[in-house]
Length: 274
Length: 288
Image 1 (cartoon, rainbow over the protein chains, first blue to last red):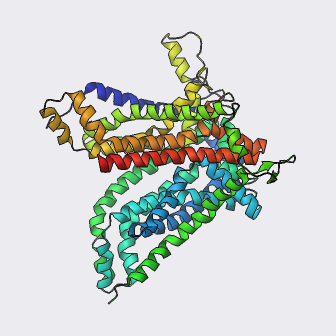
Image 2 (cartoon, each protein chain N blue to C red):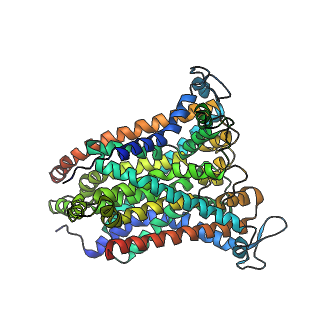
């Protein structure tokens, strides 16, 4: 087989990576800039970071964001994983309907999801943007993503493993707990991570459903950047980017280890039966 | 002896599905039904919704000459973004798959890293880049391409650039998957049969990776046509898109029935796009 060589294509690839990362690098660099106007480089400073800690508006927004994300991750991971597992096993005509119901929230524009929930809460609950309303909204748009990820893994899973556990005397719960769940764990973890990223970052759906006292971090950031570029926002952004990058790279390493562990997980049924 | 009955199995399956699907029916389908009903109503003098003369008037309004440019704007931005993402994304996906070697996974993670990073922050980063005295203008002036700052922000250019940047990872991932799955021997066979590199690409590689191209288009077009953040932050006040108009109608203008009808039109666009893409994909995969 021919080994492909193409220096032009490699140069192009380098340019695309530069395009992807240049804006983020510039953003980070300017978070250390000793100038409020933030146009030109005036020297290195760390001043903007400690200032964040005394910004109570920002900290309140962060706290709301975390409360919303926690509920979104927990509930959508549980409900989404169950749906994913159920769909992988469903072999009837009902499957097409369930699939469509699952796909719809993912292809519906965010702004439509946001405004429909706003009207729904106003009409049905007379809701005025409580944290609970945000939690429900976020759970709603996260479920499908978790379900799709878990379904992909459940569909590739050998159904005989669970049957074998049952034949060896495991209860339905035992077979699920010691066989199915460990096999699905990487997909469930990936789904939970995605749910957190989606919830933590959401602006559009949140802006329709937030009210007084339930402003989230993206809402706070948006309000600031509408009026221009500030070093504080650069500093917040840098922290978020750094945390995200570390989490993703860790998950990548961890995921590779998980791939090795899979063979060991297949040995678990023996423990479950014994 | 523990083997469950077929009936018990089915019950258990629905037990797994019921809580999640039930949630979506209550908090997704029902709200959509509500805005559909509201889209058939009118606004009265006090900005309340009335159903004195229910009908599809609001939908007709969306296509009148005053609003039509907004609709066409949205379509144009989304289409341009989709094409750019495919053109930029295909070679890079190809490069990672064929030249990535043992770093393939890392190279792919690096492409996806911006996707996991906040969309809001990535858009903000372009505000820093494109300002009159921003990085891009400084570089252009330093190399002598221009003496005065060029207005880059709040233009059609900045909106399309921001969207392309934002959705490029969505395009690269499915393209990579389909290119990586392609058996390189097929291309080798074409070359052995005296196809030029270009012919082999046009007649073998490209048709066989069509499902990836379709998926990439879908994953770019759908978020692009409904995008609010990019046109609002990088497009300024002069750029109107359907999502911006909906947001104004709801949070400022308070003409809910009209806003709801625009939401439904936007949804129809994305559903049509999805169905079209899925059908094409099925034909590509099954019918070859």
